[in-house]
Image 1 (spheres, one colour):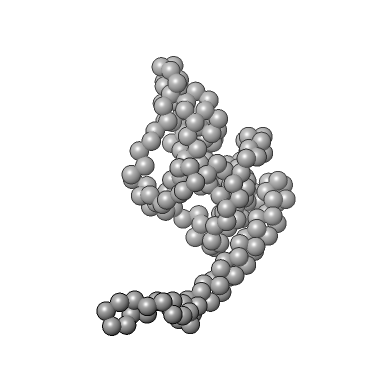
Image 2 (cartoon, helix red, strand yellow):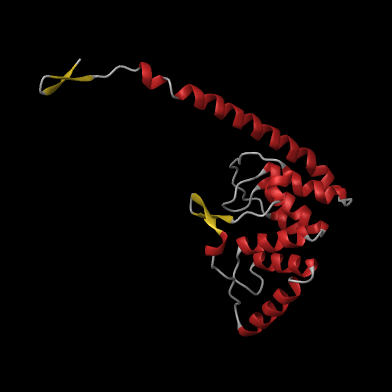
Length: 197
């Protein structure tokens, strides 16, 4: 798990608005679906893509692992890795993250650490989310993960930077509106036509 996430170095650095760790861990009814350079929030019940096994034997193994993953967080972790890697199934990072979250929610420290790394650095089209990273790394650190303890200050610093950026954006937003109130028109309507002044 650690090797996989550490070798994924092609991360997009896009900031997300920081939220409390508790609010980040609550399940949402929407998922972030990205294609090319744009992302949208989509109703989770509308996401229908399912990973397809690459052959019949893989289909049987995937079905058996999926059934096991519903009951065992270690199997959910393994299924997540197979979906990340495309091992016996088509790669599907969305489903991989869902299974990894299921394992993390069940208390599996390796899944919590993996999620912390994933959200700290971002993955594929998904940018980093320092608040989510901090929440998952905190959970893994509380179980004794030394790696999570080392990464936690980075997540906290990234979250602080994102808070500062958010505050700066909000301050600028309040200054944007007045410019158009004092700007002069070039064209004025007089009589039956427009005149340039």
